[in-house]
Length: 489
Ligand code: CA
Image (cartoon, rainbow, N blue to C red; front, top):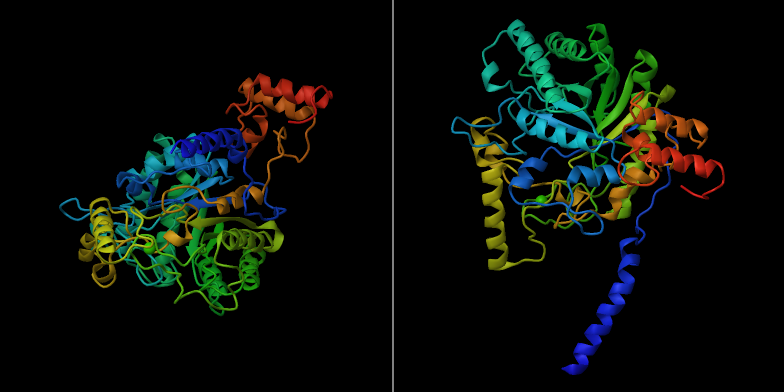
């Protein structure tokens, strides 16, 4: 016994010596930088379900295991934009949430506000529905049922403008707004190009009136379908839809090759001068399920095909993100402006991995109760009144917990670093021109004097002493570096 105590003491001493090294441990995952053509390339992540997950008790930790705000962890790892979906009224008459994060405007305000605290901009994804909208479903909100097209046109305008105003008041830094989600075949219960164009333009006008610097995006999917991207871009050009960004979903197990993605988006960029982006992508880092709800990608489905170029591990996940960013960056004329990862933090509310029999059932029942209470699964049973054919039958947990950048305990995976490694910071380069010169010290001084405002990567690069702000001490350090008094920043 005494010997064991001595060994433990020695181990503790060794750990104390090693711990500082462990905290600085190098990531096991690496990717090469991408030479982005668009200066402020969106390295985005959709974390719409975060509020419901936190209500159910989930906490997030950085790569060292320290609990931190999810938005700080994302910002520290190079994410620069947060995407959030908004449903008009994802609740039944008794106030029970439909699930999928119960993502109403109130949730979006919390997400936008917290994102802005860490310099993250917000990309707003209006579904104009009370629950999931995609190529197969574009049901109008309950409150809009029975409206004529012109009434809906006004409703889309008012809802868009008023929601954006509320987001701004809450402190969100809105940079882009999607008029609908995966609107290949309709929007808000309307189908046919003419009616869709009317509602697209209503949303677009509202965004322009809110803030003319905010980009307007249309969002479609299925870039792999022969001629579809051309058809959509041509059609809505013919209907004079006013938008800036053609956004597509790109899930590599469904949506064709990266070469085709670049080719399709380049058509829109070259023909109509539009920006393009991937608004949703994701990739599995394991085939394990950790919450008891079957995942989209697993050992039996969506795991084979010539377009799946990456291993199903963290390195493969990081490689997929880098590859999709590269494919968008290769779009004609530098018009590829970003990639958003879909729900990179939608982890389990209770780890079921490796559990069997009674232990499995107990954990599953626990998870299911949380999905129902807080809406942190993809759908709750309460959604059946609005979506009886799909949610009503298959409601449950997360289908993408194996595509997140966090493990089942909420700890950041090494693969999350891909968002920084594709675009490394040059410390001291406050003006973002790729060099550290005297103008950078001047830029920091101007920021200090409130003559200019540094945000995002520019603020991070300016904060050379790492105290979380850019001020006169940082400007002095940059001057000392330039004078050779200190050798690195
Ligand atoms: Ca799952």
